[in-house]
Length: 190
Image (cartoon, rainbow, N blue to C red):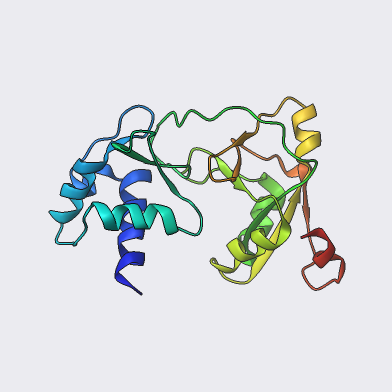
């Protein structure tokens, strides 16, 4: 794994879960002072400077991080396990969203629904193929189609993060349908 990828993973850990790992604090909205983050990461023995941090933010394929308009602060777009108010605004979801997971989690999801599992929100994808990619990271992939429009009509809130990930606090099992990844119809859903 490359140095930039390792740094990106560490930044993710710091900005989403453990700011103390770099000796920094986050404000109530999840923002960290960018210079303090660079100093804190450097004090862990990792090599980083402003140019490297900007490159990581700019090139991250999932756009996990963003700078404040003046570039002095940085935060994770979503995925926090620590309480922060990321300033998410409620949004109207498409009729269907998708969630990718592994085979080992499928049975409990079908009975209990989707839960944040240590995060603040359940993460949902706008298409089935993205959800399948997420599921692959956890083992044999399973994709659930979420009846997001129906959920919203039942007054369940949805939020859209800066990087395009749909979020909800919980997805009850009655709004889930497990997709058969082997059927040709799956490709039409993506």
